[in-house]
Picture (cartoon, rainbow, N blue to C red):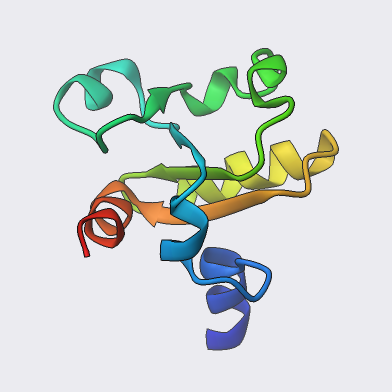
Length: 104
């Protein structure tokens, strides 16, 4: 069970999250209200319920990192984007986790 959760939340294709973040389109999938309270510098806000409708914004991005408050919505966002044909999506988990990786 732990390995399954680890794969869901940290699957980065062999690269570390920090390496991927160096050249990534950062997407906070929380609500607009949550995003206004704070997020990762340089991130865009595309709430989970708008991911599919705004799929064009992900086109031609080298790396896409999605994140949220707990990692659950970002996991769903990754699944949606994968179904839409995007293979370069990483679930960064929480926005705090992504922020921490960027600051190290």
